[in-house]
Image 1 (cartoon, rainbow, N blue to C red):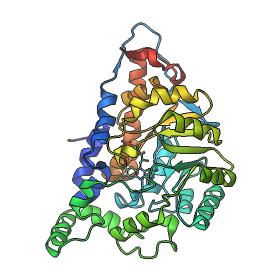
Image 2 (image 1 turned 45 degrees about the vertical axis):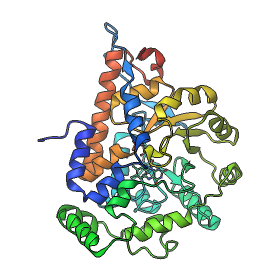
Image 3 (image 1 turned 135 degrees about the horizontal axis):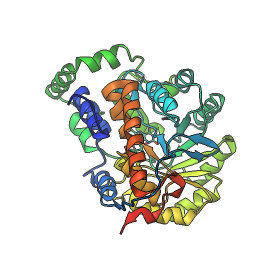
Image 4 (image 1 turned 60 degrees about the vertical axis):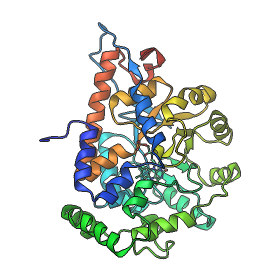
Length: 381
Ligand SMILES: Cc1cc2nc3c(=O)[nH]c(=O)nc-3n(C[C@H](O)[C@H](O)[C@H](O)COP(=O)(O)O)c2cc1C
């Protein structure tokens, strides 16, 4: 490959650059990966209807969400441990997102802290919250996001427990290993010197930046993962959402909704947005694909809340498909992480350029010049 052309090309570059344990952590899903695969397959099954002889000389890919104008109907999704894929990856990706005119979302369990991403950017980015048992820590982190002028709080609710990802177990991520297995893991890592230098030397400190001082033993990846499983609160209910609502004055987005009643409840609880998401197929394996549940959820909430969708979006054609079925915009997770792992900030910029070009071409060929005009009529039944 002389130059990456598509998001899947960036995936291939990331696969070559990362140690196997890192690539599989990003690429994999829960259990048998049925939901992970369904996200992609169900999107690809949707055919777009070609329309000709429309004036498509001026294509506008911009949208307005929560009072913010965005150049594309795309948001970079929160990804934990992203800074393990490239040096200070969250700051690099946030810069690329800002240049592309779209929001970046920082994960609670990112490597870069809120303040570092704030320094790297000049426009508001979004912050993603996990509910931890220690409500004092949660209160403080929400205050830090507000102080950094974050444009939205994305409250992720589909991780009361951490999904089991078989690839991680097989690769020894967060698992006790025999000494032979440890040597094999070390050998695989040693064969990726560019990654070791970028992340292990230049990318330090490798801990959860937002939780420095809270995570007691951040000496290894396994320790961070183990901390996550004990610190996150499985007892969270809609009542806690009210508490978060009381603390956060800006737009509040509930991420991880797959059911119409839950979507209505999120709207009733005062959320301005929802993300139809199955966490990229990393939590409940056997859950439906997001594209298949999107239309009913969008219909159930109508215009009461902004509907975002993620899971399997890898191209501008996928974005068009999601818009057609009721999404106001899409989040992308793995797509940007492949980009940053492959080529840092330039890789994220490359992914976003690729998707923008694909979206523009798709819009021209379905005869639509504005994002708002894309509806179910663009699908071939
Ligand atoms: C490696 C990885 C880590 C993730 N970490 C988080 C996280 O910390 N918080 C969160 O809300 N979602 C997290 N997600 C889910 C993403 O935000 C998003 O929902 C998902 O990646 C969308 O699917 P896609 O990767 O197919 O685009 C993670 C996803 C991946 C792949």
